[in-house]
Image 1 (cartoon, rainbow, N blue to C red):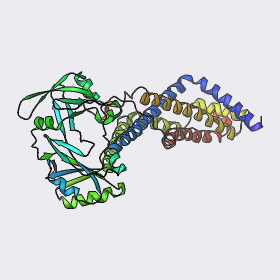
Image 2 (cartoon, one colour; image 1 turned 60 degrees about the vertical axis):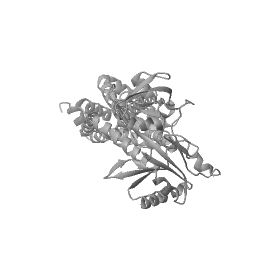
Image 3 (cartoon, rainbow, N blue to C red; image 1 turned 90 degrees about the horizontal axis):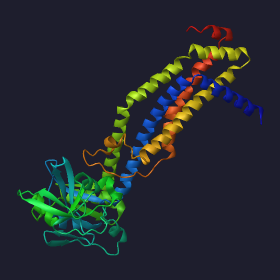
Image 4 (spheres, one colour; image 1 turned 180 degrees about the vertical axis):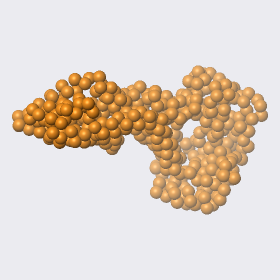
Length: 416
């Protein structure tokens, strides 16, 4: 064993014994430090993973959604606009879509109702079929029409519906039960639940209800010549923005929304929610900052006396600084790894019960799903430099100041 390694081993042994002599103080410090790391790591892990989860799920969403806008608000989309969109070069498929919101006063929750488009390129509209031309050899275009929501082969026909898992839990209903709705004409519609949506998409389908065109139009009183919006598939994915621009020029009262814009919106929402959680727990972060500042402002009288004794028995200034470095490193690394491990268990195994209501954002229908861990070196490095480095530096600076003064003076300054 080299002399340097042997020397470091002795310094570390002394550092451990010094920490144990101040157990109460160091345990309190370690607890606070671990709590700070836990809060920051949990927020970072949850926000990053839920953004990744949403991005993966939304890859199956439409490339372009076309809405009609009147006075800056979303209006019903005329089916007559479809022919104008179909005539634009580069479009592989166009489908109409019916969707909307329904408030359930019984449980105080909003449901999202959707009439899913037919994958064959046809959409049922009150008994009539609207066919949209699709190139059968264009495998990429056909793949893009894969449904975002899977419902395990349940049959969706008039008088039935398929519900999300959040709706099932909220209303305590399942396959075979009936769910009442108040239609636009004041009549009660009792629709039978024929299945539930797959839990793999619960992040975006917890409050979703799939319903047929016929029942949707009856429920909301929408005429056959209107739909909610249209979804467009483009032959060349690199031309999505260009095709969206052509649609806007041809239909001046329309608003094309591309998939990337939806993904950016989700990114912004979860970034904002993650920042909101940091603000909520800023009191704990502020307590840590105050403590680090106090640590940097100077050592206690007992610590200064200990340094004076070490200098008197032959320790060099560099040895004292190394001792304090190992002391700070032991506390900060222990707190760092403990906080990260607890945050990992809290987010990916326990379901993040502390942050779930604020970060998921549903007012009543909370999705129940297990996040897939998405952790990279950038996250860990950022967390490390935010927590470990400042504290370690804060322990070294005052130690250097105390170690450079006369040992006799350091031992006499016990009253400060």
